[in-house]
Length: 449
Figure 1 (cartoon, rainbow, N blue to C red):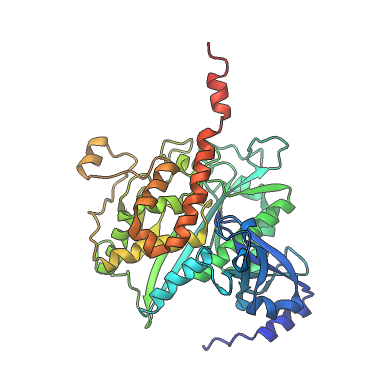
Figure 2: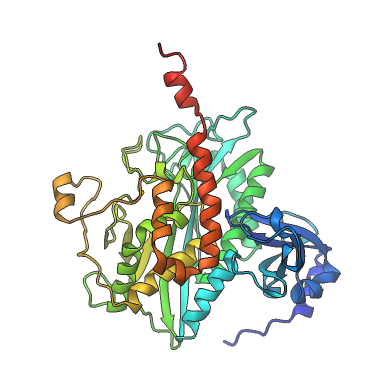
């Protein structure tokens, strides 16, 4: 069946008929947060051709000066992304890509991903991804405490808890209906392995569209959750005793004829030679990738892979891969590659661009991955880890940022301009953490003799 050609005028007519009067021109800053402004619907053509103007230095990570023609950030919308928001009456959302001085802004994370994908397209290939959002839902607390939204959500091993799902049925139904209204192909919703933690699965898509859709998911989940008097959180590891949240990427690449590049049904792990080379690239560049895929101080509490109240953390710690092995950094499953490093504090465009760049470097350089490990890495002895020469991921954000700084090949493949600004922003975050005095320090040392 042929896909009907997109018509901007037809879309505008549909939006007017639905009562839409404004467009939220939405971009994503370097930290992964949705930003934007409201523009009257009648100015859509200007948003397509010129873009919505923003003060560049007022946005995290643009690298733009305070004066001159390149001090203005222009977000040009993708007209196909115009979509009425059911949870914001009268408003449609459109996705922006960054420009400055009439040129592509190299520090815009969406432009970074688009460039990597264009290079792949020139080789006759398309990248696809299924993104698995995990998140926490907290109470609206007057203090700084974090508490699961439902007081009855207390089980030590709460995965798939029917009772809590039923109790939260009104919120879940509201979230489901709003996502369906936005054309999400919902697959499943479940209570995850920590109190207050949830996961929503929906259909995979071409990589840039999937990144745009994930941002729409976050905006929708935040808005719906707030309407029920609760807080949606992308914090990777809010509770020390419980598992944290991941943002797993299910990756695949197809050729122009639709053939799956990574898949080989006759292989013991289901992967072709290029699929294994892609895995090798991910593992080789994993320390640097951590800086982009696990970009917060808190991310490394999730990656510590210590025991949890529920029995396991489900987070990777060792740089390894295996067949259907959820304890490994890379899991091969059904001829595709699951990348388990990312967490929801990441900028999804940057994380995908870095991940794809690393995997493609593995193919370009004919890398060979280490032997797969199909046993439980959490139970593996130190001696066996040493025998397999398994390296650990960076222990903290500082180590990860240093790894990215040293990985010139990955930075060049991803985009040096973006990486330079990204490192500046994140190094400041790391320094802020190092000078912060925490409640733990006060409790442990404040009254010491």
